[in-house]
Amino acid sequence: MRFRNIKDVFAIFLVLALIVPICSLAANKLIIYTTNYPLAYFAERIGGDHVNVEFPVPPDEDPAFWKPDEETVRQYQKADLIILNGAGYEKWTKKISLPMLRTVDTSKAYKDKLISIETNLTHSHGPKGDHSHGGTAFTTWLDFSQAAMQAEAIYQALVRKMPAQKEYFARNFGSLQDELLELDKQMMKISDNLSGTPLLASHPIYQYFARRYGLNIKMMMWEPDEDPGPAEWKKLQEALADHPAKVMLWEDKPLAESSQQLKDLGIESLVFAPCMNRSAEGNFFTVMRTNIDNLRIIHQ
Figure (cartoon, rainbow, N blue to C red):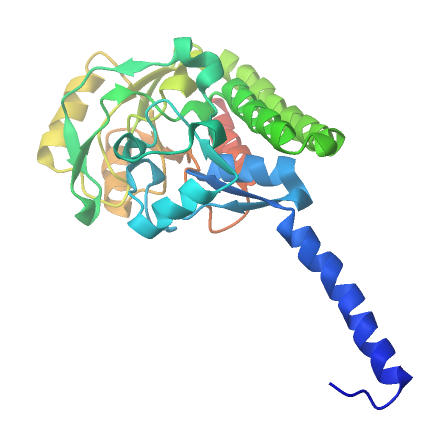
């Protein structure tokens, strides 16, 4: 390659000087694969510029019942860190091998406090087929104190991988932890007003939420985008006999017909989204703050 003058040499040297550090920086980032949106959000907040966080679940699927294809499994296996929710959340991991030293079970710190569910009932999420909510309750992060512990597990894993960045990770984790514990504090205040109030939930995903905040919730097996059907409406009527709830919590906005039929029974529909997948708007905290605001109206 022949250069016409010294200016050409200098220009090429300058371009290389700019490109190489960027490439080096990208190469030094940790590749993290996660299995639900809360974990992805926590990892992004704590890791900041030092991580690339991958959450490969399609936006229209429930991460708890999603199964990755072979290529996606290989990407998990090659990652610097694999962040799991634990509590039986990632059922697909029972059938494949993940590198143990690079895999983090974020609910391990409170494994003795996980809630077992005894049920043989199954239902379907659209075309994906039937599934059961039996086994272990897995929406652990709806107890915001547990969410803070899950964030701490991610923080500790990042420090082990990048000890030189401990101070940076600690600052980010501290900020995230403060926000999670503020949510916990707000819910504790709300729970004082809801103590003993019978509530309904459309789906059996609020076990840790109910336990932490002392809520009296009876859970159904309904989907927000499906008509529950006559049998489920009958079950609801039977439940109301000894659980006279005036509010039902939904994971997403229900069908207008379902909402109206509940209203005819004197039951208001409120959304308390678990935020398992990425929200079309906002982030984990904007969703949870909206959830809490929705609850505040119950006794207004």
